[in-house]
Image 1 (cartoon, rainbow, N blue to C red):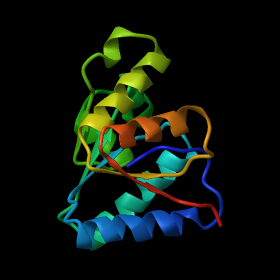
Image 2 (tube, rainbow, N blue to C red):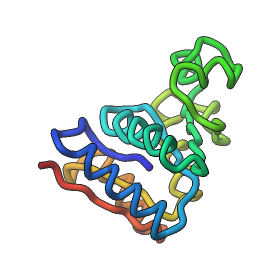
Image 3 (cartoon, one colour):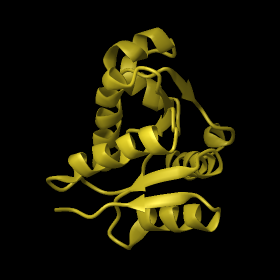
Length: 149
């Protein structure tokens, strides 16, 4: 679950509503999360809270560069990182280590698109988040687009 800009007021409730719908009606039990912007961080927080109510769901932190783990906990050790933010596992997609930081984000996003059925998104119909969602739709991923309140 990812994609978008800073989260406007009221959007966290919409993220929660859609995530609960995915868990209860679509049998989603794994959430791919990131921390590359306000929306991703808020979505991550929502899923962490939902994991308390739905302990069977898994949270997979998808990183675009190894610095993401340093920022989370200072070391590669998953246990140390989990103490700060909480997740069940992390994925460092192939090719992310091959390029510049921004290119790593592109490879991470491609990995997410290729490994998910749903994306909860908030974007302003322009920019990289918009292009990510457009690409996901083109690959058959159901994109749940939220509106700010």
